[in-house]
Length: 626
Image 1 (cartoon, rainbow, N blue to C red):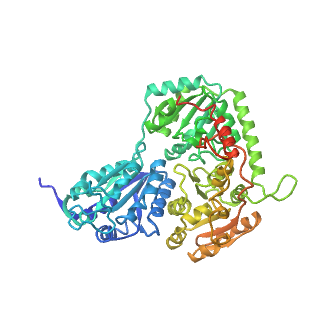
Image 2: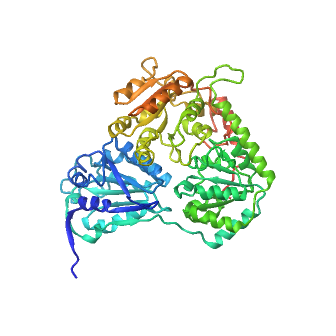
Image 3: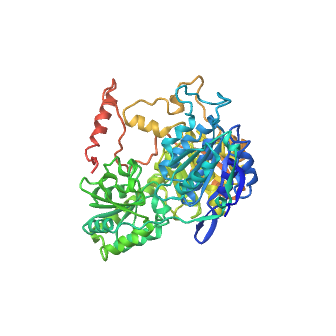
Protein backbone atom coordinates (compact mmCIF):
# COMPACT_ATOMS: atom_id res chain seq x y z
CA UNK A 1 0.00 0.00 0.00
CA UNK A 2 1.42 3.37 -1.04
CA UNK A 3 1.62 5.88 1.78
CA UNK A 4 -0.31 9.06 1.00
CA UNK A 5 1.82 12.18 1.13
CA UNK A 6 1.39 15.93 0.97
CA UNK A 7 4.06 18.26 -0.35
CA UNK A 8 4.79 21.11 2.05
CA UNK A 9 7.65 23.40 2.91
CA UNK A 10 9.41 22.68 6.16
CA UNK A 11 7.80 25.77 7.73
CA UNK A 12 4.32 24.79 6.53
CA UNK A 13 4.74 21.28 7.91
CA UNK A 14 5.93 22.57 11.28
CA UNK A 15 2.94 24.87 11.75
CA UNK A 16 0.44 22.29 10.45
CA UNK A 17 1.81 19.73 12.92
CA UNK A 18 1.51 22.14 15.85
CA UNK A 19 -2.10 22.90 14.90
CA UNK A 20 -2.94 19.18 15.00
CA UNK A 21 -1.76 18.64 18.60
CA UNK A 22 -4.43 18.60 21.31
CA UNK A 23 -4.52 18.00 25.05
CA UNK A 24 -7.34 16.79 27.25
CA UNK A 25 -7.93 19.00 30.29
CA UNK A 26 -10.78 18.25 32.68
CA UNK A 27 -12.68 16.44 29.97
CA UNK A 28 -12.15 19.20 27.40
CA UNK A 29 -10.16 18.78 24.19
CA UNK A 30 -8.05 21.89 23.60
CA UNK A 31 -5.17 22.72 21.31
CA UNK A 32 -1.97 21.94 23.17
CA UNK A 33 -0.36 24.97 21.52
CA UNK A 34 -2.54 27.99 22.27
CA UNK A 35 -0.78 30.15 19.69
CA UNK A 36 2.31 32.25 19.88
CA UNK A 37 4.13 35.54 19.94
CA UNK A 38 6.14 36.81 17.03
CA UNK A 39 8.29 39.60 15.68
CA UNK A 40 9.15 39.01 12.04
CA UNK A 41 12.48 39.67 10.41
CA UNK A 42 14.39 38.34 7.45
CA UNK A 43 14.99 35.06 9.31
CA UNK A 44 11.34 34.09 9.76
CA UNK A 45 8.98 36.33 7.81
CA UNK A 46 9.07 34.90 4.30
CA UNK A 47 8.58 31.21 5.05
CA UNK A 48 7.50 30.71 8.65
CA UNK A 49 5.42 33.88 8.44
CA UNK A 50 3.64 32.54 5.36
CA UNK A 51 2.83 29.28 7.15
CA UNK A 52 1.59 31.03 10.29
CA UNK A 53 -0.69 33.24 8.22
CA UNK A 54 -2.39 30.17 6.77
CA UNK A 55 -3.12 28.90 10.31
CA UNK A 56 -3.85 32.25 11.97
CA UNK A 57 -7.26 31.06 13.21
CA UNK A 58 -6.01 27.84 14.84
CA UNK A 59 -2.77 29.34 16.17
CA UNK A 60 -3.33 33.05 16.87
CA UNK A 61 -0.16 35.10 16.74
CA UNK A 62 0.36 38.08 19.06
CA UNK A 63 2.84 40.78 18.05
CA UNK A 64 4.99 41.78 20.99
CA UNK A 65 7.57 44.54 21.22
CA UNK A 66 10.67 42.55 22.14
CA UNK A 67 11.57 38.89 21.70
CA UNK A 68 12.62 38.51 25.32
CA UNK A 69 9.32 39.90 26.58
CA UNK A 70 7.31 37.77 24.14
CA UNK A 71 8.93 34.60 25.43
CA UNK A 72 8.35 35.80 29.00
CA UNK A 73 4.69 36.20 28.11
CA UNK A 74 4.69 32.60 26.86
CA UNK A 75 6.24 31.53 30.18
CA UNK A 76 3.61 33.47 32.13
CA UNK A 77 0.88 31.80 30.08
CA UNK A 78 2.30 28.32 30.69
CA UNK A 79 2.57 28.96 34.42
CA UNK A 80 -1.01 30.21 34.64
CA UNK A 81 -2.15 27.15 32.68
CA UNK A 82 -0.26 24.87 35.12
CA UNK A 83 2.00 23.60 32.31
CA UNK A 84 -0.93 21.93 30.57
CA UNK A 85 -0.73 24.19 27.50
CA UNK A 86 2.09 26.19 25.92
CA UNK A 87 2.74 29.02 23.49
CA UNK A 88 5.64 29.58 21.11
CA UNK A 89 7.81 32.60 20.45
CA UNK A 90 9.39 33.15 17.06
CA UNK A 91 12.31 35.37 16.16
CA UNK A 92 14.41 36.29 13.18
CA UNK A 93 18.06 35.32 12.92
CA UNK A 94 20.75 37.05 14.99
CA UNK A 95 19.88 39.51 17.79
CA UNK A 96 16.19 38.66 17.62
CA UNK A 97 17.12 35.13 18.60
CA UNK A 98 19.62 36.04 21.32
CA UNK A 99 16.92 38.17 22.93
CA UNK A 100 15.14 34.90 23.75
CA UNK A 101 18.01 33.55 25.83
CA UNK A 102 16.99 35.07 29.17
CA UNK A 103 13.43 33.80 28.81
CA UNK A 104 14.73 30.33 28.07
CA UNK A 105 16.56 30.51 31.40
CA UNK A 106 13.29 31.33 33.19
CA UNK A 107 11.48 28.42 31.56
CA UNK A 108 14.32 25.97 32.19
CA UNK A 109 14.74 26.91 35.85
CA UNK A 110 11.01 26.75 36.51
CA UNK A 111 10.41 23.56 34.47
CA UNK A 112 7.93 25.31 32.18
CA UNK A 113 7.03 24.58 28.54
CA UNK A 114 8.21 27.16 26.00
CA UNK A 115 8.71 26.57 22.27
CA UNK A 116 11.21 28.84 20.53
CA UNK A 117 11.20 28.93 16.72
CA UNK A 118 14.27 30.89 15.71
CA UNK A 119 15.77 31.79 12.36
CA UNK A 120 19.19 30.32 11.65
CA UNK A 121 22.04 30.57 9.16
CA UNK A 122 21.73 29.15 5.64
CA UNK A 123 22.58 25.45 5.54
CA UNK A 124 24.08 25.72 2.05
CA UNK A 125 26.39 28.56 3.17
CA UNK A 126 26.25 29.84 -0.39
CA UNK A 127 25.54 33.47 0.61
CA UNK A 128 27.89 33.50 3.65
CA UNK A 129 28.67 35.69 5.43
CA UNK A 130 25.17 37.07 5.77
CA UNK A 131 23.60 39.86 7.73
CA UNK A 132 23.70 39.24 11.52
CA UNK A 133 25.81 36.08 11.15
CA UNK A 134 28.43 35.54 13.83
CA UNK A 135 31.31 33.86 12.01
CA UNK A 136 33.57 31.27 13.62
CA UNK A 137 36.54 30.64 11.30
CA UNK A 138 37.38 27.27 12.89
CA UNK A 139 33.76 26.09 13.26
CA UNK A 140 31.56 27.35 10.40
CA UNK A 141 28.54 25.36 11.63
CA UNK A 142 28.42 27.25 14.93
CA UNK A 143 25.90 30.07 15.36
CA UNK A 144 24.47 32.13 18.18
CA UNK A 145 21.67 29.57 18.37
CA UNK A 146 24.11 27.10 19.93
CA UNK A 147 24.09 29.32 23.03
CA UNK A 148 20.65 27.91 23.88
CA UNK A 149 21.95 24.40 24.56
CA UNK A 150 22.59 25.22 28.23
CA UNK A 151 19.07 26.54 28.85
CA UNK A 152 16.88 24.09 26.94
CA UNK A 153 15.51 20.62 27.56
CA UNK A 154 15.44 19.87 23.84
CA UNK A 155 17.56 21.58 21.17
CA UNK A 156 17.67 20.87 17.46
CA UNK A 157 18.63 22.56 14.21
CA UNK A 158 16.41 21.49 11.30
CA UNK A 159 18.85 20.95 8.42
CA UNK A 160 16.44 19.02 6.18
CA UNK A 161 12.62 19.07 5.99
CA UNK A 162 12.40 15.32 6.71
CA UNK A 163 14.03 15.93 10.07
CA UNK A 164 10.70 17.24 11.40
CA UNK A 165 9.32 13.68 11.36
CA UNK A 166 11.60 12.88 14.30
CA UNK A 167 12.19 16.28 15.87
CA UNK A 168 8.64 17.56 16.29
CA UNK A 169 7.28 14.56 18.23
CA UNK A 170 10.34 14.70 20.49
CA UNK A 171 9.76 18.41 21.06
CA UNK A 172 6.10 17.91 21.94
CA UNK A 173 6.95 15.04 24.28
CA UNK A 174 9.39 17.32 26.10
CA UNK A 175 6.84 20.11 26.42
CA UNK A 176 4.24 17.81 28.01
CA UNK A 177 6.43 15.50 30.09
CA UNK A 178 6.03 16.31 33.82
CA UNK A 179 9.60 15.30 34.69
CA UNK A 180 11.51 16.66 31.69
CA UNK A 181 9.27 19.64 30.96
CA UNK A 182 11.11 22.73 29.87
CA UNK A 183 11.99 24.96 26.95
CA UNK A 184 12.41 23.58 23.43
CA UNK A 185 14.56 25.35 20.86
CA UNK A 186 14.30 24.70 17.13
CA UNK A 187 16.78 26.47 14.89
CA UNK A 188 15.19 27.04 11.47
CA UNK A 189 17.75 27.80 8.75
CA UNK A 190 16.37 30.37 6.35
CA UNK A 191 16.80 28.26 3.22
CA UNK A 192 15.51 25.03 4.77
CA UNK A 193 12.32 26.77 5.92
CA UNK A 194 11.29 27.05 2.28
CA UNK A 195 12.45 23.65 1.07
CA UNK A 196 9.63 21.25 0.23
CA UNK A 197 9.22 17.59 1.11
CA UNK A 198 6.58 14.90 0.61
CA UNK A 199 5.36 14.36 4.16
CA UNK A 200 3.14 11.41 5.09
CA UNK A 201 -0.40 12.70 5.58
CA UNK A 202 -0.65 10.56 8.72
CA UNK A 203 1.98 12.79 10.33
CA UNK A 204 -0.60 15.58 10.51
CA UNK A 205 -3.44 13.52 11.93
CA UNK A 206 -4.98 15.05 15.05
CA UNK A 207 -3.40 13.71 18.22
CA UNK A 208 -4.75 14.19 21.74
CA UNK A 209 -2.15 14.12 24.51
CA UNK A 210 -2.74 13.26 28.16
CA UNK A 211 -0.69 14.34 31.12
CA UNK A 212 1.42 11.42 32.30
CA UNK A 213 1.06 10.51 35.98
CA UNK A 214 3.63 8.22 37.55
CA UNK A 215 2.98 6.09 40.62
CA UNK A 216 5.89 5.88 43.08
CA UNK A 217 8.04 2.80 43.55
CA UNK A 218 6.72 0.66 46.41
CA UNK A 219 10.13 0.41 48.08
CA UNK A 220 10.65 4.17 48.02
CA UNK A 221 7.15 4.60 49.38
CA UNK A 222 7.75 2.17 52.23
CA UNK A 223 11.00 3.92 53.23
CA UNK A 224 9.28 7.30 53.20
CA UNK A 225 6.39 6.03 55.33
CA UNK A 226 8.78 4.49 57.84
CA UNK A 227 10.66 7.78 58.19
CA UNK A 228 7.47 9.79 58.65
CA UNK A 229 6.05 7.37 61.21
CA UNK A 230 9.13 7.96 63.35
CA UNK A 231 8.61 11.73 63.36
CA UNK A 232 7.76 13.67 66.48
CA UNK A 233 7.89 17.03 64.71
CA UNK A 234 6.97 16.42 61.05
CA UNK A 235 6.69 19.30 58.60
CA UNK A 236 5.50 19.52 54.99
CA UNK A 237 7.12 21.85 52.46
CA UNK A 238 4.65 22.40 49.62
CA UNK A 239 6.29 23.52 46.37
CA UNK A 240 5.12 24.67 42.97
CA UNK A 241 4.94 21.09 41.74
CA UNK A 242 1.86 20.57 43.91
CA UNK A 243 -0.01 23.03 41.70
CA UNK A 244 1.40 21.71 38.44
CA UNK A 245 0.20 18.24 39.46
CA UNK A 246 -3.21 19.70 40.37
CA UNK A 247 -2.65 18.06 43.74
CA UNK A 248 -3.72 20.84 46.11
CA UNK A 249 -6.77 18.86 47.26
CA UNK A 250 -4.65 15.75 47.89
CA UNK A 251 -2.08 17.85 49.75
CA UNK A 252 -4.72 19.40 51.97
CA UNK A 253 -6.34 16.04 52.69
CA UNK A 254 -2.96 14.50 53.52
CA UNK A 255 -2.02 17.31 55.89
CA UNK A 256 -5.36 17.29 57.68
CA UNK A 257 -5.55 13.53 58.07
CA UNK A 258 -2.08 13.37 59.64
CA UNK A 259 -2.21 16.80 61.39
CA UNK A 260 1.07 17.92 59.83
CA UNK A 261 1.81 21.66 59.60
CA UNK A 262 2.52 22.95 56.08
CA UNK A 263 4.89 25.66 54.90
CA UNK A 264 5.10 26.93 51.34
CA UNK A 265 7.93 27.72 48.96
CA UNK A 266 7.86 30.86 46.83
CA UNK A 267 6.67 28.82 43.83
CA UNK A 268 4.25 27.01 46.10
CA UNK A 269 2.50 30.11 47.39
CA UNK A 270 -1.27 29.60 47.06
CA UNK A 271 -1.17 25.84 47.59
CA UNK A 272 -3.23 26.69 50.69
CA UNK A 273 -5.44 29.69 51.37
CA UNK A 274 -4.36 31.97 54.18
CA UNK A 275 -7.19 30.93 56.51
CA UNK A 276 -6.31 27.23 56.45
CA UNK A 277 -5.36 26.29 60.01
CA UNK A 278 -2.40 24.15 58.84
CA UNK A 279 -0.93 26.88 56.62
CA UNK A 280 2.05 28.08 58.65
CA UNK A 281 3.44 30.54 56.12
CA UNK A 282 6.29 30.75 53.61
CA UNK A 283 9.64 29.19 54.43
CA UNK A 284 13.21 30.32 53.81
CA UNK A 285 15.12 33.51 53.13
CA UNK A 286 11.98 35.44 52.18
CA UNK A 287 9.78 33.50 54.54
CA UNK A 288 8.04 33.90 57.86
CA UNK A 289 9.06 33.43 61.47
CA UNK A 290 6.32 30.84 61.80
CA UNK A 291 7.58 28.62 58.96
CA UNK A 292 11.27 29.05 59.74
CA UNK A 293 10.88 28.41 63.47
CA UNK A 294 9.09 25.16 62.67
CA UNK A 295 11.67 24.23 60.04
CA UNK A 296 14.49 24.57 62.57
CA UNK A 297 12.82 22.08 64.92
CA UNK A 298 11.32 19.62 62.46
CA UNK A 299 12.83 16.15 62.64
CA UNK A 300 11.29 14.80 59.41
CA UNK A 301 10.49 17.08 56.48
CA UNK A 302 8.23 15.98 53.64
CA UNK A 303 9.16 18.12 50.62
CA UNK A 304 6.56 17.84 47.86
CA UNK A 305 7.07 19.28 44.40
CA UNK A 306 10.01 21.53 45.23
CA UNK A 307 13.53 21.69 43.85
CA UNK A 308 14.77 22.97 47.23
CA UNK A 309 16.58 26.05 45.96
CA UNK A 310 18.56 28.24 48.33
CA UNK A 311 15.75 30.69 49.09
CA UNK A 312 13.72 27.75 50.38
CA UNK A 313 16.51 26.12 52.37
CA UNK A 314 18.24 29.26 53.60
CA UNK A 315 21.29 28.02 51.70
CA UNK A 316 20.72 24.80 53.71
CA UNK A 317 20.76 26.49 57.13
CA UNK A 318 16.97 26.46 57.66
CA UNK A 319 16.75 22.87 58.94
CA UNK A 320 18.15 20.99 61.89
CA UNK A 321 21.40 19.20 61.06
CA UNK A 322 19.88 15.80 61.83
CA UNK A 323 16.52 16.40 60.15
CA UNK A 324 15.56 13.74 57.61
CA UNK A 325 14.12 14.87 54.29
CA UNK A 326 11.61 12.84 52.31
CA UNK A 327 11.18 14.30 48.83
CA UNK A 328 8.17 13.54 46.63
CA UNK A 329 8.88 14.76 43.13
CA UNK A 330 8.11 13.69 39.60
CA UNK A 331 11.71 14.55 38.69
CA UNK A 332 14.41 12.14 39.84
CA UNK A 333 17.00 14.93 39.94
CA UNK A 334 14.94 17.00 42.37
CA UNK A 335 13.75 14.07 44.48
CA UNK A 336 17.26 12.98 45.45
CA UNK A 337 18.78 16.32 46.50
CA UNK A 338 20.81 16.51 49.72
CA UNK A 339 20.53 12.81 50.48
CA UNK A 340 16.73 12.96 50.62
CA UNK A 341 14.73 9.79 50.73
CA UNK A 342 13.34 10.04 47.19
CA UNK A 343 9.79 9.21 46.22
CA UNK A 344 9.81 9.65 42.45
CA UNK A 345 6.22 10.06 41.39
CA UNK A 346 3.35 12.38 40.63
CA UNK A 347 2.17 14.25 43.72
CA UNK A 348 -1.51 13.72 42.95
CA UNK A 349 -1.02 9.94 42.92
CA UNK A 350 1.79 9.71 45.47
CA UNK A 351 0.21 11.56 48.38
CA UNK A 352 -2.87 9.29 48.71
CA UNK A 353 -0.79 6.09 48.64
CA UNK A 354 1.73 7.57 51.07
CA UNK A 355 -1.17 8.53 53.33
CA UNK A 356 -2.48 4.99 53.17
CA UNK A 357 0.96 3.66 54.11
CA UNK A 358 1.01 6.00 57.13
CA UNK A 359 -2.27 4.59 58.39
CA UNK A 360 -3.51 6.41 61.48
CA UNK A 361 -0.27 8.29 62.08
CA UNK A 362 -0.77 11.88 63.23
CA UNK A 363 1.66 14.48 64.46
CA UNK A 364 1.76 14.82 68.26
CA UNK A 365 -0.68 17.38 69.61
CA UNK A 366 2.06 19.42 71.28
CA UNK A 367 3.71 19.97 67.88
CA UNK A 368 0.41 20.97 66.24
CA UNK A 369 -0.27 23.41 69.08
CA UNK A 370 3.19 24.94 68.69
CA UNK A 371 2.52 25.40 64.97
CA UNK A 372 -0.78 27.13 65.73
CA UNK A 373 0.96 29.58 68.08
CA UNK A 374 3.64 30.33 65.50
CA UNK A 375 0.96 30.88 62.88
CA UNK A 376 -0.97 33.30 65.10
CA UNK A 377 2.18 35.27 65.99
CA UNK A 378 3.08 35.67 62.32
CA UNK A 379 -0.44 36.78 61.41
CA UNK A 380 -0.21 39.48 64.07
CA UNK A 381 3.15 40.62 62.67
CA UNK A 382 1.74 40.88 59.12
CA UNK A 383 -1.20 42.90 60.47
CA UNK A 384 1.24 45.40 61.92
CA UNK A 385 3.67 45.27 59.01
CA UNK A 386 1.05 46.07 56.37
CA UNK A 387 -0.60 48.86 58.34
CA UNK A 388 0.12 52.47 57.29
CA UNK A 389 0.06 53.56 60.93
CA UNK A 390 1.91 52.40 64.02
CA UNK A 391 0.24 51.08 67.16
CA UNK A 392 0.26 54.59 68.64
CA UNK A 393 -1.52 55.96 65.55
CA UNK A 394 1.37 57.79 63.90
CA UNK A 395 1.99 57.48 60.16
CA UNK A 396 4.68 55.18 58.83
CA UNK A 397 6.76 55.71 55.66
CA UNK A 398 4.96 54.11 52.71
CA UNK A 399 6.36 50.61 52.11
CA UNK A 400 6.02 47.62 49.81
CA UNK A 401 4.24 45.74 52.61
CA UNK A 402 1.62 48.45 53.00
CA UNK A 403 0.98 48.52 49.24
CA UNK A 404 0.65 44.73 49.17
CA UNK A 405 -1.65 44.70 52.17
CA UNK A 406 -3.88 47.41 50.69
CA UNK A 407 -4.30 45.62 47.35
CA UNK A 408 -4.83 42.35 49.22
CA UNK A 409 -7.69 43.95 51.13
CA UNK A 410 -9.61 45.16 48.08
CA UNK A 411 -8.86 42.58 45.37
CA UNK A 412 -11.25 39.80 44.39
CA UNK A 413 -10.46 36.25 45.56
CA UNK A 414 -9.80 34.98 42.02
CA UNK A 415 -7.61 37.89 40.93
CA UNK A 416 -4.11 36.70 40.00
CA UNK A 417 -0.96 38.31 41.41
CA UNK A 418 2.33 38.47 39.48
CA UNK A 419 5.70 39.67 40.81
CA UNK A 420 9.37 38.97 40.08
CA UNK A 421 12.90 39.90 41.17
CA UNK A 422 13.91 42.89 43.26
CA UNK A 423 12.37 43.46 46.68
CA UNK A 424 8.77 42.70 45.78
CA UNK A 425 9.00 38.87 45.66
CA UNK A 426 10.10 38.78 49.30
CA UNK A 427 7.47 41.27 50.33
CA UNK A 428 4.66 39.57 48.40
CA UNK A 429 5.70 36.14 49.65
CA UNK A 430 5.78 37.29 53.27
CA UNK A 431 2.76 39.60 53.35
CA UNK A 432 0.22 38.38 50.78
CA UNK A 433 -2.73 36.53 52.28
CA UNK A 434 -3.89 34.04 49.70
CA UNK A 435 -7.63 34.19 48.99
CA UNK A 436 -7.86 31.41 46.39
CA UNK A 437 -5.70 28.48 45.34
CA UNK A 438 -3.19 28.99 42.56
CA UNK A 439 -3.63 32.75 42.45
CA UNK A 440 -0.02 33.85 43.05
CA UNK A 441 2.88 33.88 40.55
CA UNK A 442 6.13 35.07 42.09
CA UNK A 443 8.87 34.40 39.52
CA UNK A 444 11.86 33.76 41.75
CA UNK A 445 13.32 30.63 40.20
CA UNK A 446 15.44 32.65 37.76
CA UNK A 447 14.68 35.88 39.67
CA UNK A 448 14.31 37.73 36.41
CA UNK A 449 13.75 41.46 36.39
CA UNK A 450 11.39 42.49 33.63
CA UNK A 451 9.22 39.38 33.86
CA UNK A 452 6.50 41.19 35.78
CA UNK A 453 4.73 43.08 32.99
CA UNK A 454 5.57 40.69 30.15
CA UNK A 455 4.84 37.56 32.17
CA UNK A 456 1.73 39.29 33.44
CA UNK A 457 0.57 39.86 29.86
CA UNK A 458 0.90 36.15 29.10
CA UNK A 459 -0.70 35.21 32.42
CA UNK A 460 -3.61 37.50 31.62
CA UNK A 461 -4.15 35.86 28.23
CA UNK A 462 -4.45 32.54 30.07
CA UNK A 463 -6.39 33.98 33.01
CA UNK A 464 -9.00 35.42 30.63
CA UNK A 465 -9.86 31.90 29.49
CA UNK A 466 -10.95 30.87 32.99
CA UNK A 467 -11.77 34.16 34.74
CA UNK A 468 -12.62 36.83 32.16
CA UNK A 469 -14.29 38.98 34.82
CA UNK A 470 -11.31 38.92 37.19
CA UNK A 471 -8.03 40.82 37.06
CA UNK A 472 -4.33 40.08 36.78
CA UNK A 473 -2.47 42.32 39.23
CA UNK A 474 1.18 43.17 38.59
CA UNK A 475 3.46 44.39 41.38
CA UNK A 476 6.57 45.95 39.84
CA UNK A 477 9.34 48.20 41.07
CA UNK A 478 10.59 51.21 39.15
CA UNK A 479 13.81 49.36 38.27
CA UNK A 480 12.04 46.43 36.61
CA UNK A 481 9.53 48.78 34.98
CA UNK A 482 12.35 50.71 33.32
CA UNK A 483 14.00 47.48 32.23
CA UNK A 484 11.01 46.08 30.33
CA UNK A 485 7.66 47.86 30.12
CA UNK A 486 6.62 47.75 26.47
CA UNK A 487 4.04 45.02 26.98
CA UNK A 488 1.77 47.57 28.60
CA UNK A 489 1.29 48.60 24.99
CA UNK A 490 0.92 44.94 23.97
CA UNK A 491 -1.73 44.36 26.62
CA UNK A 492 -3.77 47.33 25.40
CA UNK A 493 -3.51 46.19 21.78
CA UNK A 494 -4.55 42.64 22.66
CA UNK A 495 -7.34 43.56 25.08
CA UNK A 496 -5.60 41.68 27.87
CA UNK A 497 -6.24 44.14 30.67
CA UNK A 498 -3.86 44.22 33.63
CA UNK A 499 -3.68 46.30 36.79
CA UNK A 500 -0.05 47.38 37.18
CA UNK A 501 1.07 48.79 40.54
CA UNK A 502 4.41 50.58 40.15
CA UNK A 503 6.28 51.02 43.43
CA UNK A 504 8.90 53.71 42.85
CA UNK A 505 11.73 53.66 45.39
CA UNK A 506 14.29 55.46 43.28
CA UNK A 507 16.28 52.58 41.81
CA UNK A 508 17.33 49.09 42.80
CA UNK A 509 16.58 49.55 46.49
CA UNK A 510 16.71 45.91 47.59
CA UNK A 511 20.22 45.46 46.17
CA UNK A 512 21.17 48.71 47.86
CA UNK A 513 19.91 47.12 51.09
CA UNK A 514 22.06 44.03 50.47
CA UNK A 515 24.99 46.32 49.67
CA UNK A 516 24.56 48.16 52.97
CA UNK A 517 23.91 44.98 54.98
CA UNK A 518 27.28 43.61 53.86
CA UNK A 519 29.09 46.76 55.00
CA UNK A 520 29.33 48.44 51.61
CA UNK A 521 28.52 52.05 50.82
CA UNK A 522 25.51 52.81 48.60
CA UNK A 523 26.84 52.84 45.05
CA UNK A 524 25.23 52.50 41.60
CA UNK A 525 21.90 51.08 42.82
CA UNK A 526 19.72 54.00 43.81
CA UNK A 527 19.57 56.59 41.04
CA UNK A 528 20.85 59.22 43.47
CA UNK A 529 24.00 57.16 44.04
CA UNK A 530 24.88 56.66 40.36
CA UNK A 531 27.28 58.64 38.18
CA UNK A 532 25.04 61.40 36.83
CA UNK A 533 25.42 64.50 34.69
CA UNK A 534 22.27 66.13 36.11
CA UNK A 535 20.34 66.20 39.35
CA UNK A 536 18.50 62.90 39.87
CA UNK A 537 14.81 63.01 38.99
CA UNK A 538 11.88 60.61 39.07
CA UNK A 539 10.24 59.15 35.99
CA UNK A 540 6.64 60.16 35.35
CA UNK A 541 5.28 56.63 35.18
CA UNK A 542 1.70 57.85 34.81
CA UNK A 543 2.50 59.86 31.68
CA UNK A 544 4.62 57.04 30.29
CA UNK A 545 1.87 54.46 30.72
CA UNK A 546 -0.70 56.79 29.17
CA UNK A 547 1.58 57.20 26.17
CA UNK A 548 1.27 53.45 25.61
CA UNK A 549 -2.51 53.59 25.67
CA UNK A 550 -3.12 52.56 29.28
CA UNK A 551 -5.21 54.41 31.81
CA UNK A 552 -3.02 55.62 34.65
CA UNK A 553 -2.81 57.74 37.76
CA UNK A 554 -0.40 58.62 40.55
CA UNK A 555 -1.37 58.27 44.20
CA UNK A 556 0.25 59.52 47.38
CA UNK A 557 -1.22 57.44 50.21
CA UNK A 558 -2.53 53.98 50.97
CA UNK A 559 -6.11 55.24 51.12
CA UNK A 560 -5.70 56.82 47.68
CA UNK A 561 -4.25 53.54 46.42
CA UNK A 562 -7.36 51.65 47.49
CA UNK A 563 -9.60 54.19 45.78
CA UNK A 564 -7.50 54.05 42.62
CA UNK A 565 -7.66 50.27 42.63
CA UNK A 566 -11.44 50.51 42.52
CA UNK A 567 -11.19 52.70 39.43
CA UNK A 568 -8.70 50.25 37.91
CA UNK A 569 -11.22 47.48 38.45
CA UNK A 570 -13.78 49.39 36.39
CA UNK A 571 -11.34 50.23 33.61
CA UNK A 572 -11.79 48.63 30.19
CA UNK A 573 -8.04 48.50 29.58
CA UNK A 574 -4.74 48.13 31.39
CA UNK A 575 -4.54 50.50 34.34
CA UNK A 576 -1.26 51.67 35.86
CA UNK A 577 -1.10 53.05 39.42
CA UNK A 578 2.15 54.73 40.37
CA UNK A 579 3.26 55.63 43.89
CA UNK A 580 6.45 56.23 45.80
CA UNK A 581 7.66 53.90 48.55
CA UNK A 582 10.53 54.42 50.95
CA UNK A 583 13.85 52.95 49.85
CA UNK A 584 15.21 52.51 53.38
CA UNK A 585 12.34 52.10 55.85
CA UNK A 586 9.48 49.67 55.89
CA UNK A 587 11.18 46.48 54.73
CA UNK A 588 9.79 43.32 56.28
CA UNK A 589 12.31 42.73 59.07
CA UNK A 590 11.24 39.33 60.35
CA UNK A 591 11.01 35.90 58.78
CA UNK A 592 14.43 35.73 57.16
CA UNK A 593 16.90 32.88 57.26
CA UNK A 594 20.60 33.21 56.51
CA UNK A 595 21.48 33.37 52.83
CA UNK A 596 24.87 32.66 51.34
CA UNK A 597 26.39 35.52 49.36
CA UNK A 598 30.03 36.18 48.66
CA UNK A 599 31.57 38.81 50.93
CA UNK A 600 35.17 40.15 50.77
CA UNK A 601 37.68 38.50 53.12
CA UNK A 602 39.99 41.46 52.62
CA UNK A 603 38.88 45.09 52.48
CA UNK A 604 40.06 48.57 53.37
CA UNK A 605 36.69 49.13 55.03
CA UNK A 606 36.30 48.07 58.66
CA UNK A 607 32.53 47.81 58.12
CA UNK A 608 33.03 45.38 55.21
CA UNK A 609 35.49 43.28 57.22
CA UNK A 610 33.09 43.10 60.17
CA UNK A 611 30.16 42.25 57.91
CA UNK A 612 32.19 39.39 56.42
CA UNK A 613 32.88 37.91 59.86
CA UNK A 614 29.24 38.30 60.91
CA UNK A 615 27.94 36.82 57.65
CA UNK A 616 30.24 33.82 57.82
CA UNK A 617 29.08 33.15 61.39
CA UNK A 618 25.66 32.38 59.96
CA UNK A 619 27.14 29.42 58.12
CA UNK A 620 27.47 27.34 61.29
CA UNK A 621 24.25 25.30 60.88
CA UNK A 622 24.71 24.79 57.10
CA UNK A 623 24.10 21.19 56.01
CA UNK A 624 27.04 19.88 54.00
CA UNK A 625 25.21 17.80 51.41
CA UNK A 626 23.55 15.40 53.87
